[in-house]
Length: 341
Image (cartoon, rainbow, N blue to C red; front, side, top):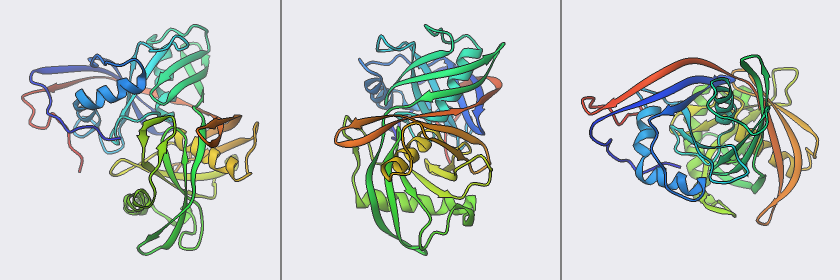
């Protein structure tokens, strides 16, 4: 969800950050300089951030301080008693309700740097705009080796939406929710599979497909009307890694392709497959990214969201820290608000 384009407030602004990546996709954890947010829930605080402080996201995620694939997060005190910490997601595509790779990276950096104090070692409970997320982590000395997140309930929202795509003919997609709404494209006449698409093809085709899908059908989360519209497009294909069940490339924002296997995308994909009878509780689903990294998915339980049969998915992956960054946003810089090419 995009915010309101707003000017950067006058003066000098300093942000302390830890930079890293989750299976190849960037995570910038803002540890200092973040704004105070209003709201009784993280969903309300997300709306407040978008209304009053979205310049922070644009300045830190867009060029010249970020890039077209940049992703980040900010930690806050929780709004609910059953969580250790709250998390807000910021990236080039907006202030997302949930981000899987961002959660794995944030938990890794927060634990390794003492930024969060879990009530129980090995488990961090996060208050996210999309709902409560439970992350379990494996720690070896000072380092976190892996993180598994138990995501929010995910479901197939609208099956078999058909749209006409120039050069591809009639395409059929499933719209599924895993923290964001995805248009999932499986091999069919007109699309042989991800193995036949380059990264440039994904960048070229996805915005038009997303536009046509959103014009064809309106999707709104039945329990949170602020989560609406297809924001991500997933192209699927055969796995290359012997461990993986499938490979994917997820498009988001204006020109971003997820380098990780995508956490909310993997959740949406598992929900789609479960609705099709291809996955059941206890089944694993190992998802391969466009660069060959893997997320280990698993169907943990069944659930119901509105009138949708849903699953509770979990996703496991790893993250690494590669820098500590102090970022200045000041009024002398004519490009302080950020830009994308």
